[in-house]
Image (cartoon, rainbow, N blue to C red; front, side, top):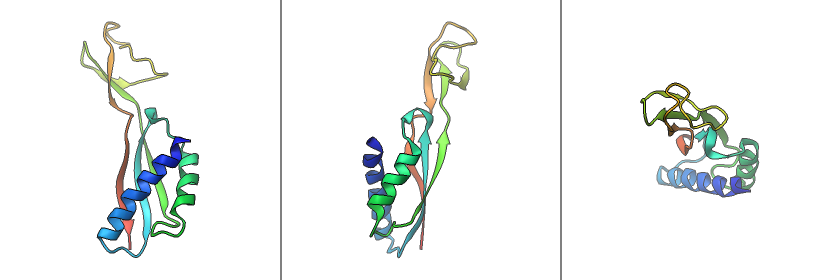
Length: 113
């Protein structure tokens, strides 16, 4: 389960920030997770809850913003949502889509006390 490794990375970022800023508690960790990242949110929440126990982040909410998969045609330049992982431009039918968004995995912000 790669969600455990992701949860460890999130916790490391949050604790580093919390300690640097002398936080007493981390209440919320906002994440941006791309549609194509392959992250299972329920597994991530479960993993995070386990590893955060006994830390500043114990009980912290993981607020996840899902980022849609969007592509831009290499040929005609149009940007569009990618459906069913079809990376062929439906407009010009002659170009391959480059990924603009949808692979993100980042901590957007933290709320600390």
